[in-house]
Image 1 (cartoon, rainbow, N blue to C red):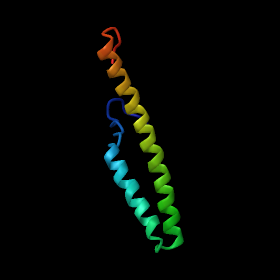
Image 2: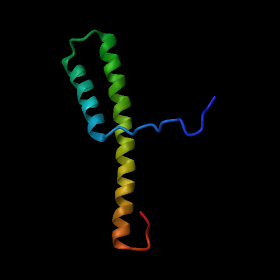
Image 3: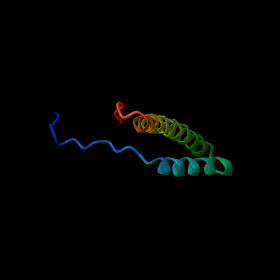
Image 4: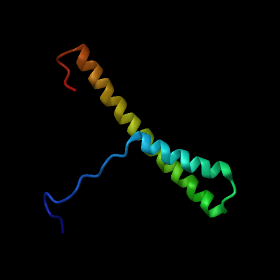
Length: 78
């Protein structure tokens, strides 16, 4: 059952937040002292976060390219 207008938009995480999450997961892996299950979970978090950060970077690059083109050519809409 969906109520129109009551759904909250999903927030896109900030790149800096993703980077912090990735750094934390990498630190856990680098320590190597946690139980294997925790190291595997940290590795999975790192992979998911890396993919999410890459997707966000790709989106931001497209937006930056559009802005750049619109500044060079007023007929291009950003």
